[in-house]
Image 1 (cartoon, rainbow, N blue to C red):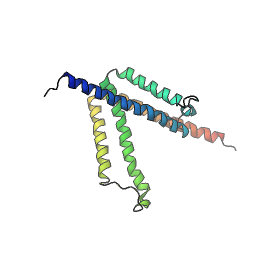
Image 2 (spheres, rainbow, N blue to C red):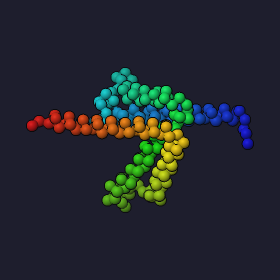
Image 3 (tube, rainbow, N blue to C red):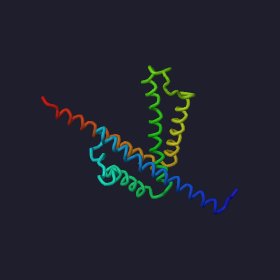
Image 4 (spheres, helix red, strand yellow):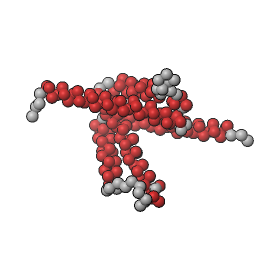
Length: 178
């Protein structure tokens, strides 16, 4: 059944508002993640720098906005941007959900002490992980170039993380007296 041009316009507005809300969440959270990484010594100290007047994370927000602009410039179409973003989000979601298994193992001594329990554990997190893995694989099959570009960027940032961590360890050893 075809609902007409009015329905298409309404759905377009709803899709636009949904994407706008998602971008808002990213602009609010990712610079703060960069700030936290800076405080942990993973990123340079400049990433925790705030504007005196507005208390805005200047470097973190600028770097994140620049990365977003590069993605828009590279991808060019909404579908490509969405596929790229969702593909990379799949990694974050799967790894975040998988941490519940690590946390459960580390806190087994707290069982029966009122700690939060999840019904159908471990089935629910496994279903969640399987669903996001399926989405990631689907994008890889449907848009291999986009997925490979995402993997390349993810790999670059993982390598950068370990290089920065290694350099920080060397500089700590070099600054110790004696």
